[in-house]
Amino acid sequence: MAYDSTATKERILAAATAEFAAHGVAGARVDRIATQAQANKRAIYDYFGDKNKLFAAVLEHLMADLARAVPPGDDDLPAYAERLFDYHRAHPEALRLLMWEALELGDQPVPGEQARTRHYEDKLRAAAGAADAEAADVDDDARTRLFFTLGLVGWTLAMPQLRRMILGADLPLDHLRPAIAQAVQGLAVPVTPAAEE
Image (cartoon, rainbow, N blue to C red; front, top):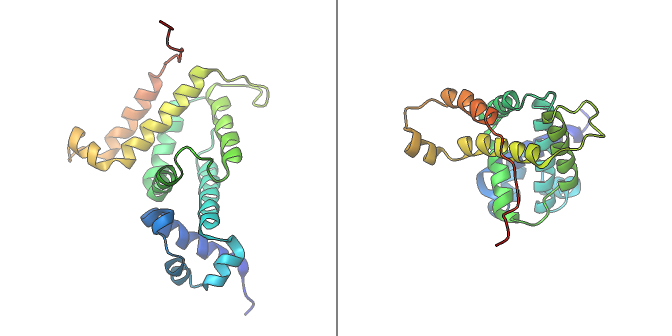
């Protein structure tokens, strides 16, 4: 049987996704990734480079999956929020990886930042209902609404302890999905600079 490098890369990415989601970049161990992927460490380094480059590849893979699963597609931001909520519920590692990225990189540039920024621009144009996606001029209000939409979805799922303490342990997540859509529908927040005194 011939060696399948594509299958090996996929196993490595899957194992690395689980490892980074559980431990972040600093706590992740290439040995554990190799064992879980049924690959040797040399293959990891040959295909992806060092641990930071592997983390970047995991995030790139994750963001591509997310973009395919939850495309911007229409101008209905509340429906987009519900689809995003469903995706993150089914794939909790996605939010965990984004949180690790924020914790470990802070304000530094992130892996694939330019491509990810273009993806968010596509979402902004779709949310603004632009007919010509390339020529659309997106205002600050649309940017703010998208940012807050992502926050509503992400925070709801990423902070189970706060959800439990504030909303109660018995509140099903299914009740929050339409509540998020309703909150997104009500977002009309102009961002204006503070007046100089």
